[in-house]
Amino acid sequence: MAEFLSNKINQRIQSDSLRSLKKLSGLIDFSSNDYLGFARSISLKKNINHFISQNEDYSIGATGSRLLSGNNAFVEDLEIELAKFYQAEAGLIFNSGYDANVGLLSCIAQRGDTVITDELIHASLIDGARLSNANKYIFKHNDLESLEEKLRNSKGNIFIITESVFSMDGDQTPLIEILNLTKKYNAHLIVDEAHATGVVGETGKGLVNQLNLEKEIFARVHTFGKAIGCHGGIILGSEQLKTFLINFCRSFIYTTALPYHSLVCVKFAHQELENDKISLSKLKNNINCFKLKSFEILKEIDSTDSAIQSIIIPGNKKCKSISLKMQELGFDVRAILSPTVPEGKERIRVCLHSFNSELEIENLLKNISKLI
Ligand SMILES: Cc1ncc(COP(=O)(O)O)c(C=O)c1O
Image (cartoon, rainbow, N blue to C red):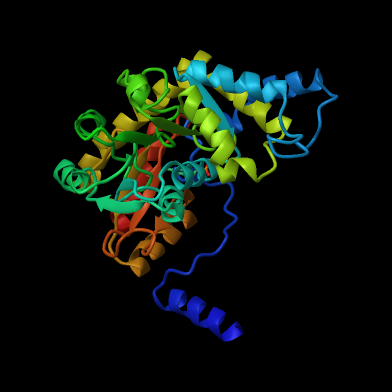
């Protein structure tokens, strides 16, 4: 076994793609998913601590799964509150976005059904689809012709899976066009809103909400670990879908529920999102600033309207070395290497935040440009 492990690790070393855990601190944050600064918000922390100090008889852990001792009025009320917030009929909270996606995709499509996924969807959706007994097709990224070709060959109940904002490239799905195809082929659309939550739309409620399509989407997944600054996720859909998931979704059934403290954080972070319009508008200014400055400084860049921007630097070695030099210069940026992204598409992934300054963005771009 030791030989097998060492061979696999050596393969990674040879392709310059060995992953390791890093402890970077004190750098300018261009890497975390804390797009709105909620995870570091002092006022949010105060609200959470105050609320918890008034309810000190709570259990530290949930003590069981939701179907056993882990259910309570607080989590049920929060699900109702969040369903209302995101304008859905019902919501079911999961311990993470990963759990939500794996659970949903693995249980919803049965043998004889078809799951059609965009080629760039997140690993959690890929893993969920893999666990399902349905037929699987992959369509070219955001390519409607490719999607329709797969739809023509689909059987049984058909599920199309996309992300509103893609996690590696930060680009958006053509949701209206995909929905039109969904309807044409009597399919069901599942949208992962992980990187749109807190970011897309006037109020940060995601792309589906921005386009007023809540009633037309079979299921939406919002995660709480990114702009919401906490941890966990929710699947939004019909009451019927919620009952189905409570009965058949293994990543919901067979795990200890989120503890009270996490749920309180999720509740108050959503209140912050509702009340604090300034953070979102600062983030949007910074996205515009990045778009303008990156065009001026780097010229060849496909910038996006989201908080995620990619500076493509082909080759693991070069990309890694530039990201390390940027860290030495005080910028927390991370290299995304193959095989996480296709060879030749290695990149420095820049995450923008409400709390970055325009000067920090300009300096980041100037330094990357020099190093390239
Ligand atoms: C698109 C997408 N979906 C789902 C997830 C998983 O969410 P979580 O981090 O809450 O498990 C991620 C996070 O990396 C993601 O980028």
